[in-house]
Length: 189
Image (tube, rainbow, N blue to C red):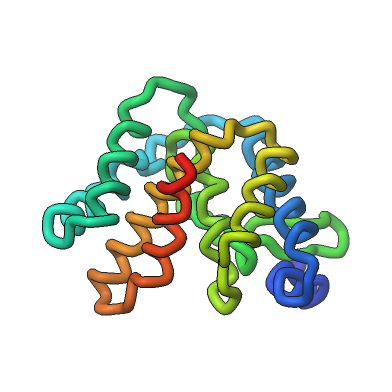
C-alpha cells in the first residue's frame, strides 16, 4: 500500500505565505476528481440530506443560520448537473503521493452541485484566521482556476458555513468563527 508523504503539506503552505499555491492545488485536485469518469453510486448521499441539520439550527438560532438556510434552499432547489462529490475536501484531506501527485483521501460520498466541493476551502485550515483580505484572495484564486461563477460560489460558501456551524452547535462547539466567514460570503453575494 502506498503512503502519502508528510511533505509537501497544504496546511504548511497556507501557514507559511503560500496560500494561493495551496488553494490552486486544492482546486486542481477537485477538478481532477470531477473529471474522472465514474458512475453515480446509489449509496451517494444527496446534499439535501446533509442540509436538514441547518434547518434545525435556523429555526432555533435564527440570524446568520436563517440567512444561510435560505441560501442553501435556493441552491438545492436550482436545477443543474448532479456530480459525485468527495464531500470533505480541505487542506488535510489532499495529500502528496510520490508516484501520483496530489490526491484526495477520506471521501464522504455525496451527490449534488459541484460548487459545494469548493466551499470548504474557505474554512480551512482551522488555525489560520480567514480575514477579509485572505478570503478575497482565495475567492479570486478559486474562480480563476476553476471558472466558477463568483456569486454562486459565495452562496455555497455561506450555505456550507451555516451547515458546518449547525454541526458545531450540535456538538456544543463554538460556531462564531464559522459564522463570521459565512457572514463574509453573505455580504458579498
